[in-house]
Image (spheres, one colour):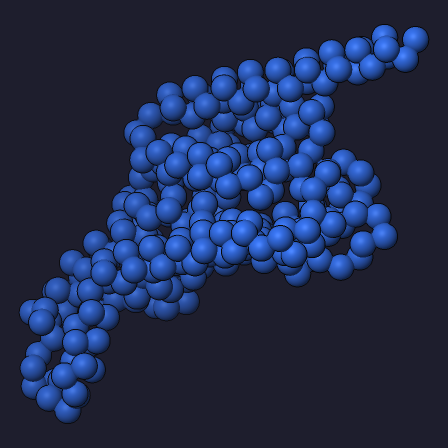
Length: 278
């Protein structure tokens, strides 16, 4: 039992309810459980999508000419992706809030659960999932995506954009907020539920500004490419845990090189086809 939960105040509760109250009085515990549970749910859903042949076939056909269904399925896939990929990157931010809240709670000050902060953060990425699903359907219908994956030339362009964005001022302004959440929470601390939800929204927007280009890479490599999901998720998490922009710039160079290679291979293939047809 924590110091700030008095036995007299919980005398009317059962043993199970008392234990639950003790857990709920530990914001850091809630934060860890929230991140782990939602991340696991995202990866579980992705695993079910990848292992079910009928679902996989429906995802491949979603948005193709003459196929007008599948938006809900594609949206579900993107929701699972953002939970699996982005929540781990938010772990340090949520835990920072939880540690501050934990300290305040031990002093007997009112605090808002990290679940509220996480809800605001997730709301931003659910909005991104909705946009990405609609974009995937639209690009597939005009023939720019094949089963959620761009052609070599478009994929190269996406990598070039993602690589160039790694050097932008907006990228590093957002990244700095993600890397150092303590000053943000310290200067904007609030004991109101609505206020904490807004803090989660703002952190979600900073994260979106930091990571949207790398998420767009999924269009280039295939929206259900589990290997790239895991790799990008790890990369974005490491990037937020670094203290300098050096890692981001190295990523930028790597993305640009991949983009140039894809475009070059596309041009070479087109020239080969032209030579063969002569």
